[in-house]
Image (spheres, rainbow, N blue to C red):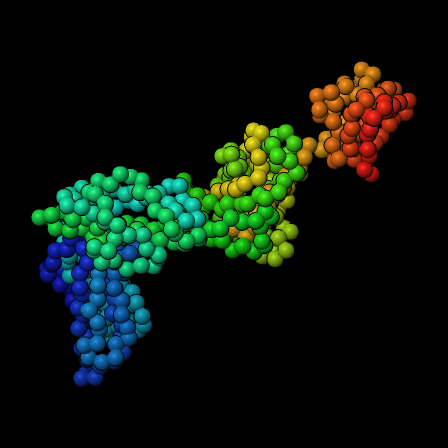
Length: 451
């Protein structure tokens, strides 16, 4: 085991550039032994090589003298400029030998690389909007020195750098957003961009970011055990799950149909990371839960293959407000928003959206089940006086066309004298004519009771 400080040796690299790396392995007492190589760069100069992306190359095991292939190292486009320590470790102890620590046989050598800004800075910072199953709007930050033109590629992930001249040509300052179509549902795509800076050279193609299209719409209720992944640390961007509501007991939200329950099962460690909302086909958003549950796990039981152990959001919530609950929130809870916000007269039929965002890193999860329940306005109808059915309380004002519904219990209060007018017809669920009450139907006036 030896260490050599070669930091007096330096080479200059450009941010965003890709460079070859040659490591030559020798022998021990004339005989080569299988060993492993790893290369680290301390990009943020914090004195260690533990940060994400600082292991830039690895290979092994070797099979003889000089059997390490030429490696390829890409300097991140956003890497801070300046001198950085590069460490090469060669060890017989196992794959990806750590940057620091002891090993039985091997060599560690340190060098210096100097990162400089490119003369032709690369484009960066992919932003997406209006993502569907098959399309997305793309925007990015041009490098700033483009002089001749640019082109871009949207390639299925994982992808490698494309060949210039094969992408979609755009100007140096494209008219954003750029709408791309023909994508696959539930697909993940890399966006590559190339810019020609004329006499100042070229930038890229560089991978400026990755995005995912929406999965196909879910049925209502959905299948159980969906196992649909949730992105980590993506707020304010949401994972959007469309729910196709094909049938409902009415046509106008707030008039003849209402949202009563939203049932969920989400497997996720540290539920305090999650914000969950439901959006109607007309664009009305209601917040279900916002960063509740702290370090607890799950909404409902993700291991229940019957999907009976759910978190049920409804406005009566026997277990109280969701903010007062404890993960896994199995039971009936009042959401943070109000379901009456959906009551705008729009149709319940169409694509609803369940939106979930994760506000912190390291904890991930999956959507396992979702169901939206609707009902018609099944409130009891009670006679309130006036001598005939024209004065039945809302929604049973017969003269206004609001008559008892098949789901409603019709109650004639004690001492009331109710006349069903000529020509009026209705269907009720049950009928309760209380003591001393009278119910009379005039000619062609009918009240049909189903039970």
